[in-house]
Figure 1: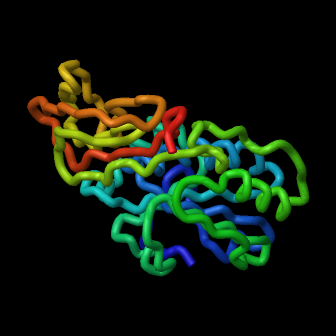
Figure 2: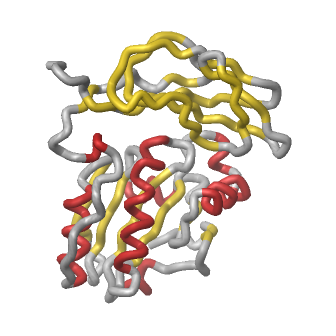
Length: 243
């Protein structure tokens, strides 16, 4: 059950028991985490494709950084990201603890009797989840195409440098580099490898996209009014010829 004290976006309060008779796809996400942003387009696509057939898609926002505990900041991110399906604000991680959830993203697919049908932790497994949705709904169709080359299970990817708390400058290996930035209404700037950039929202900002795994050095400087909670590294395809 969803704790009654929690707030919702895009919908009036939902009760899990009232969803009986339709499949429910629930995913824990955090708009500040790049991995969540990379899975979000699939959640949005499944909502658009299968809502009329009966699927209920629910994103549970479980904050991993301080800005995510502010409902107004989350609401602004939901609008900016174009999320139209229901979003539950699990500000104090109440539902997270009920599920014994351990990370972002994590999706749980329930059948029409609200029995757990499929679980997937982390990125990937998109075609498997969509096949399970189609099985429950009794429909067929081509799955959503992979949105990133790394999403293909046959792709050869390289483990990136671990995420770093706070601002970071220095060497790394990754396919892309992100920063979790917090900024006030007046906005601010950062300088990434000598290039000044505007920061006009709180959340995960893509700093560098190599298109494949690469070793490089990051030089990150923060302008006045910009706070960096973490620098995150996402995987990239192994370079041609790599072992």
